Image (cartoon, rainbow, N blue to C red):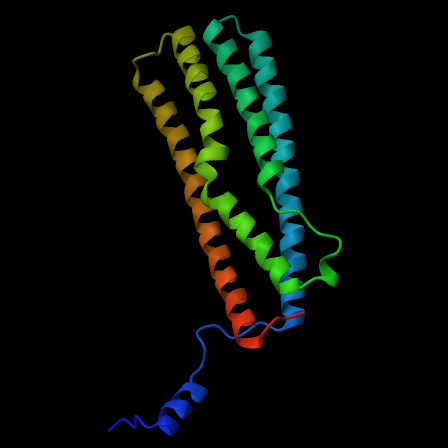
Length: 195
């Protein structure tokens, strides 16, 4: 029979293990540093990819005679610039005074900002490319005479698969960050304000 006395409930509560073990302050500092490094590497890759997209599609706009390809190329360049601007605006930034602050709160704020950014990747990262890529692919189809062919549909399907893959991977990364946020919250609740 279950003991529902105050002592029994207190012992049950005291002996129960939390879902997440609280993080030690040094572990939070290590994770925050690794997270900051990962964000910097990701941003460098994204900015390099933006530069490559701009160069390649500027060449397409200069080389191809089909007006839809030129317009699509310029729209893709505009989309790449919007994505780079959004990344710079949305990404979490390191704080040089973080050591003097509550490191748990600072790390949590960065995680929340990145989680929001990744969870909404369809809006700010994928959507700006859609108009340009559609116009570009229509221009290619028109120039090559494949407007209604199976090859054109396969190219569109491949692009949709790539976009879908990017969306799924970023949603998965956002879920991982949500788990980290819960763990940080759990640490703050159980250990008080960690510094």
